[in-house]
Length: 136
Image (cartoon, rainbow, N blue to C red; front, side):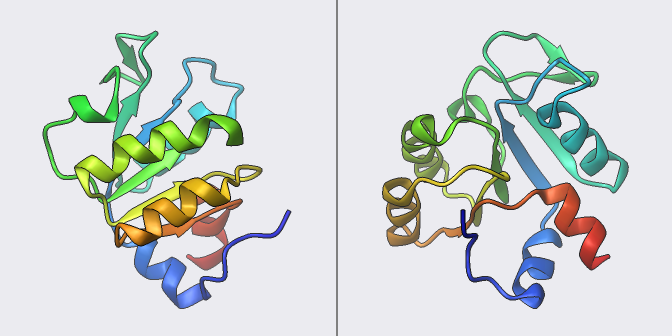
């Protein structure tokens, strides 16, 4: 699977944004959807978990939907299967984040085009942790 065409400088600019809603954040410490946000928190990111099945993850209040978040979000980081991304992106467009980041292995062209047409940058098939470690 290919990834987006962002340059390293563009990825660095995206990674400079600090308010991140993590859709599909997991309570399971062995899953990337837990240890990637945990790493981001350790690097100074303000991570807001989105998981309707949990009250808190990593001592942070969980939101059942990104639409429940009342503050401005810079990045919506998505840990959902590719075939479930469209509905997440449709919700994300309503809160107008600067970036939608689809984690490694996630790619949905329809959802990505919808986000781009709404003026939102899209990163796909990349891991925020791996990119942060590679570039910083």
